[in-house]
Image (cartoon, rainbow over all chains, first blue to last red; front, side, top):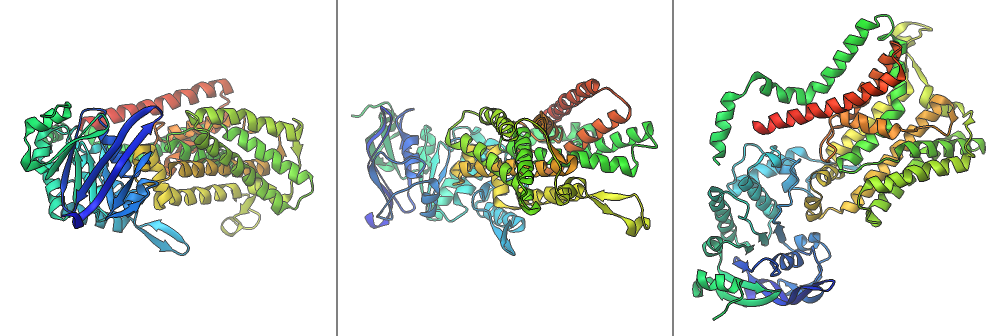
Length: 248
Length: 343
């Protein structure tokens, strides 16, 4: 089991001035595993994800990718190590088309003399291939993201995260803003990623999400590790108790 | 809410007007220019479309268009640059002093864009590194600073008389004897050629390079750009630097056109630039607008001023009209957006 370890955080703390957002938090993730992270508002879930993705630097503690210790200075560093984050606010530019969003920051280019120009044709082609692979249906790869429904936007955000063969995908409340009908599609997408061998960390408030897609669940409470269990050894009521800081 | 069903229902209700929206969105502004030209031609049949008057319009807008193009890029990032009018004056004064100091013309020619470049970079660094709450404040500050420095180095008096090579840029004529016969009066202003070349370069830059794409992304959602690993501060510094650089080129064109550097050069031209950008369809909230739209916005302002001058309409009425057009142009855009979201 342990030789499949793809990501590990050891006693990570994060302070913002006098506020302690995380205190000695541990986390590990295996290949092809879906880990659920639960906790009340302010428990430190989003902060932990931002530390893992390199958006925040941990005040204390260390991160290991494939058992090697790493220092992340920006999300670009974690991307290079195969970790992608799907943000709660989706982090998409509504004024840009789907394809531009998926490839933002990593646009395919072609060289003309000494200059690099955007390769619009290649981007469109890669976008269509990738959307088809993930079975995401949209009218056209050129459609602007602001014209999409919440579920379609979430799908684009996930497509963006996985366009470059990510090994680890972090998702912050992937179903929070979605219509009931669209939740199932996003959960299917997560199981689809698992089948492709991708490791996923899902933050969610919704027990339905956790108990549909996760292999293991861990709870944070006031910035610390509170409880953790294989999904098969726990129940909804127990996990809800953890969120509220209750343990038997 | 059932999305598919709703869309189907709206499809049936679509009126001809709604279906014409995409057409107007793309070509509406060009249509407006054509209408203006047609009306002015009817009102002033002998003068308005004469070679002399048309080239005059282009010469007038050529330096203003540089400011508008720079401010446009800034507005795409959801920023603003109020200092371009002062940058044009400072770069003009720097050019004049270099010229008076007896520097060779090719050095003098570089002075204005170089000063503009540095001023723009100063804005960009200030906005990003000093963490100003809004670019409005930084560039409002430099609006005073740059013009103040311009007056300090020149003593607040006009400086006139530049080398022929400088004058050619703003006032040069490319003769069309080939088409109109020996000694014909028809010509193309060099500043028009320069304007077209620069607009084309920036069209390529904004639409066909990664940095251009990132500029739009930052305007659409700076958080998304940052999450994508884009160094937003670096891109913003590039944008403000280019904006200053273009203002410097505007200063160079103005130097050639007027053959003098004067303390009031470019006064309030930052507002004209913003107006042209807004009339050209760019969104003040960033992320929206095209280079062609900016060109159209500049032309509308130029044609309007020229036409009203030809008809002896007072400058005061011109101000009222231009202000009204800004509000009308944006209001039409608001209406269009409302209709578009309903489909």
